[in-house]
Image 1 (cartoon, rainbow, N blue to C red):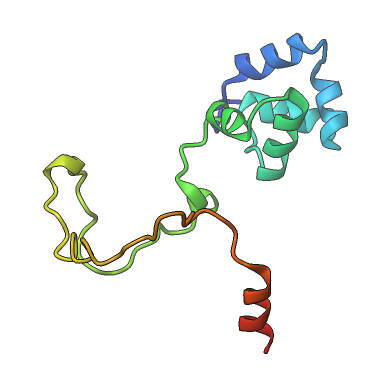
Image 2: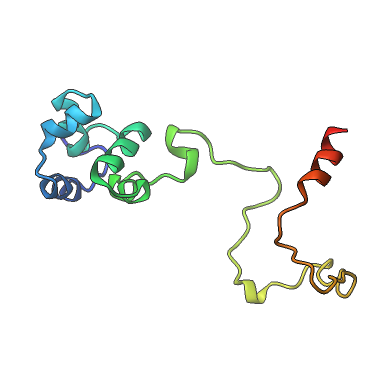
Length: 137
């Protein structure tokens, strides 16, 4: 049977080998039959998001790394044949280098209007009693 879904089988088998595991062990961890894992690694079956998360946990790698090797050319939630999100306004924006973009008209409108008093730390947590008074009265 021809490979239907692209997957980096060598990477997955290498990860199993590093951990002295085989496909049966992986199937046991995933609560799947051995044949399901075989079909998965041959590209006859898609990897689910839950399987991807569990494989990442088993291998001790990030979900992003497993996703990169599972071979699905998806963009976000487009995985389940959902249409790409569109606002319905115009055509998709072209990639323009940030340096070439003009400043937004509101840029700089607040320049010089805020004065922070000496000794005031803006990163300091808010006074708890003030918050209680504001939200609970």
